[in-house]
Length: 229
Length: 410
Image 1 (spheres, rainbow over the protein chains, first blue to last red):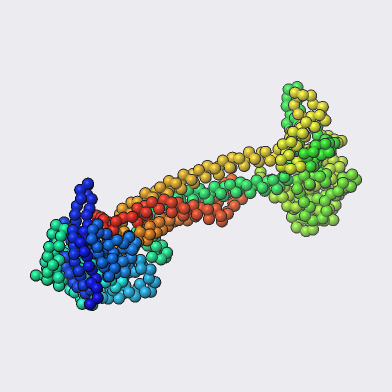
Image 2 (cartoon, helix red, strand yellow):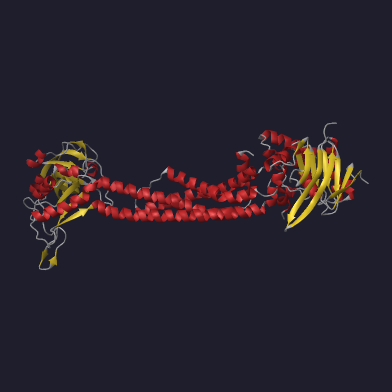
């Protein structure tokens, strides 16, 4: 196999909060190969969110290095990070974060707009992404006309529309009932089988069971790296 | 993001809050309407000024007979007939600042052509009168010094007469009777239109001064060499004041008026009267400009305020857009586009309102409606500038948000 998708060495992130130095994440060494399905677990304040922000190129580390897709992204500037996110990473949020005044398809097209794709190509890719999450018949619905599970599927379609290498999900089932949540996790498994590397941040053991590897954080440190229970 | 995408996104978010959009643009609407009205008022007044000068003749002074005082009782203007043809000749020959000084008398009477008749103003004029008033002969010929010397029975008619008395036919060579004296029409005067005060300057017949005095308008009051008025054309606009001063001095001398005694004539400076009016219209335009400037600034601040609110309200949306790959510049462009659309929208409504207002103003003030496309361009340009200027800071603020904090924002 080629180089790992994610490789961090001594990755750390400090925050300055009211004159105090808060070490949100310290000395993270982790490798995630292409095609893995990883769950990140830990109580709040354990550093799992900080870890996700760093892995997702939303933030830059204060210590250590981060190689993503075989290139060092730990010192990139804002615009370069934005381009990396646009081309290589998809995000799925707990609260979906759909644009309320746009149709499902329009929401899915959003990342493609920033990739400067033509209209026809955008439309085709958005339709394909919606089909992949089983919502091809809901393309013209507004978010308010969709159920919670459907909204999250639109969110997932948006995350995969530009064929990312990594899909990062932050508590993707947190706002859903357990049956719908299980459906969403099954969809992730399905996408993972098709080759997308998936990292899911969760505090539910039931969700983590869908992954094949669980990283546990506590007090800003990685404390366990194991198969799901 | 393409320009079209930005435009559509901006339109969408403005449509989401129609009342807010409408209220926000109000300042720009008023400002732009004021710009349009200002330009229309300014150029309308200017155009009318030009028309008036055109119809009166440029650089004109009019000398009228003065008032009499007998036993402390003042007569009206013209109660003393003091001006003569010789005064006119002296003015023209002795005062350098005067190009033409043309004596004239005025009266009115019935004009008869066959069994048709018309009542019109009759002028007795010298050839110089047409030059003084920049009045051309449209067809036929003007009167000559020979006509004047020989008291020829010839007439120039105005276009209104051609229509009314000659029923639109060719008047040249035809004979009309004025006070039982037959006159041959030798030419048609060019059209002058109405005076600013509404009287028709083309309802007129010109006769040689000598003929008019002898045959038509002569009477007890204007005898011998006396005339009703002298129309002076200054050599240039710059010399009007000098012409006025020197004409007054010369006439006082000729009329043997002692120092301290009042003039027995009036000198009317037409340009000066018009200038006073133009001044008040300029004041009006200046006032409108002030209203425009204040409204555009206040309107711009209103837009800035709403854009700041909008950025705060849509912090999560901004965070999301950044997460999926929007660069700072994309966000900046999105919000600047929105504020420019907002102010352009106000600009368009303001243009419509301004056109309506200037039509009303033109109607009320009776000047021609002058619409310059460049004033619309100016107004639209101004509102676009206001949109960029006042939208930039909120947009910059949005573009500098931290994606993580923006996504967490409640």
